[in-house]
Length: 544
Image (cartoon, rainbow, N blue to C red; front, side, top):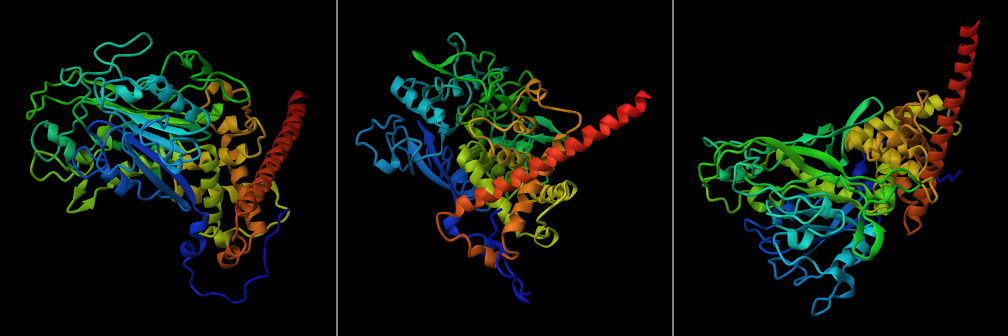
């Protein structure tokens, strides 16, 4: 076992700010985000700008050791853009600098805010985005009602079938998007401080309520990571008078591009059914007539607000789509550009509302969730180390060279509680899954199927046993990793920091996590052996 414990610290009871000691810049995970827009959406402070999103939400990751590094690109010329006349195949003139070229070397994910209706991206650019996803790059995409955003997004593999991009007609295999003016539009406007439904209600502090989808893991029902937060679930989005619509595709057998034999939705690594996108949340369209824009009352219905594809299961990049970019624009977030006096978005007396804090967390969750697998490991390897030195774990979990499985489970339960409080219930599951997948060589570990919300229930059933619950698996894995860290690292962060001062740090953490996962798996095996023996004895007694 890797042992990095130093001599015990002597009588050091001086109050310590653990956060400042544990966090140091050269060990932070860098998430490199490229945001691409076209048409009237740019990066300034005007109504259709993304400045609020970038400076108030994506300015922090809300995670220890994680920074968002943002590059802004516009397909034409846009306010605040770092790159103008952007093309995904890097064919713009002048050519981009090597450090700004679109590829997996420079960026981990790309966010697409499409306004223009035509022309559709040329094949060379579609191929560049496809290759980016195939190599593990994440994609987020959104448009608005009708065919707004069709030019950039309508034919990108996966994105094209997870949202409606065509209007008023759609080619074979695609669906027609909702219009923007009739009673069949998708209107999530909620009446705010003024009487009646108004278009400008999108710029006040009253959000729409969304309905998240929950996934059962053990005895818990957790939301998708996109809508998870500490001690709860994100249930709000900005409202708008004519949104687009997200869908789960019914046809998973298409190829990525004409003449390209790669599957759009391949089977999971290790076999099984094709990995399908999932509905994450639905919205409700039920507004009355808008008194300030002459739009009629709508025919009420629910529709897809967020859909996500876990491409990591198939060795690809993850994809998330949203019903409208009005969930992200200045006019909806801070009220900039509203024609009604007094609108300040989700700010009351200059302070962000609690609902807005949730909405900003959703934005951050997008960036965290669609990050490539190497960053998923980076996030969790860092924070499991971080919470080891947070109260109460720093005092309650002690070195134990030969722990019994009951002790591993107890440490896992303590670690679970800490992750729930610091991050979310969903993150407990995601952490355990990331750790156990680290044991896999070319295929995911058999236990990962039990813990993955993106795997169909019929696939999970192949490895599920009544003798072993998901909760036990999670507690064993978390407990094993935490016990490994506690056994190997010094008791206090001041000394531990001395061990991580060069580029070999990641390897040290990987060794500790790997040893911890093996400890957790060994505990699971012991539990199963004891249960099998107990079952045999009980069976013999009942047979007499």
